[in-house]
Length: 357
Image (cartoon, rainbow, N blue to C red; front, side, top):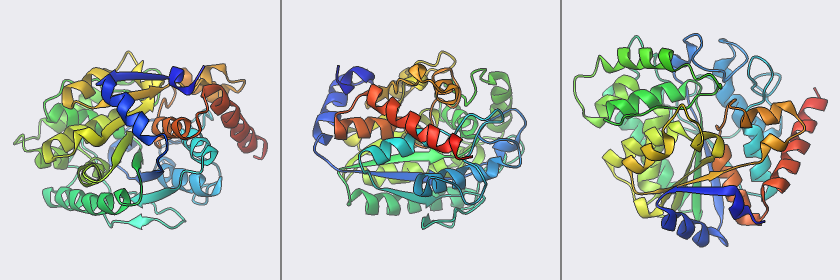
């Protein structure tokens, strides 16, 4: 068995194989974009934090954990209310297994991480159920800054992986996808996807749209991460391969990028099989509708874990986030290791975290 047996391809399968083949001897660079939308403060919308007050610390804490192996802005790594760990655990394990370097970019996080990062000065997004997420000029600035950062990072690598940490981001992503004319159903960080609540919020937000101009859609119902990462993709994909690492949010990034321009030949989405197999979403068909790019989905084998906290990912908790799927895919391409090896490393990291508490 090889790592390719752990991959599933959707969309343009030939492009998926070409994408992988060109990177077997290449270098990867992982970028984590941290951001925030006040939409996440709506009760029941996300589990990306132990409680409402700690959610704002999730993005910087994810970034710190990747660097240090522990967090500085909060005492423990980000967890769900019942103690399931952040998907950053999977990202960290993947990146360290094959020495992929990474950089953190703050594109609207409410709290700053205590580590070196690229600072954009972008402000966080507002609660889309009650007001515009951003102004039109803030969206333009986010796109422009994303283009600058994307251009710089792309020149350093054969493949730029872009991950995100933004609590509540699947709800703003759903609003953006629908606002741009796609019939989207999206994933959630919890098994019982709060679909009715999300649709209610999205419908309220979409009711404010006065135009189908893509910038206006992002300003009304989106978040800074979507605007910034679409900017990164548009410039970086002209220079190098880009793997959008994530699920629903990256579909929204792709939808906006398809309006402002990017190079399809150099672009793929990397995610986990927990997203591609999610019945409450239509992720893979949605991506095919947006652009002719491949989706590579990896099964990290966590259903075989002896730890319930890791097994939970395969049972619908978190599923993806902090660029986990894309990082695992990159680590397997670079090392040739399969999911059995990855599971062993993940369990070692899980054990380190939870026996040292």
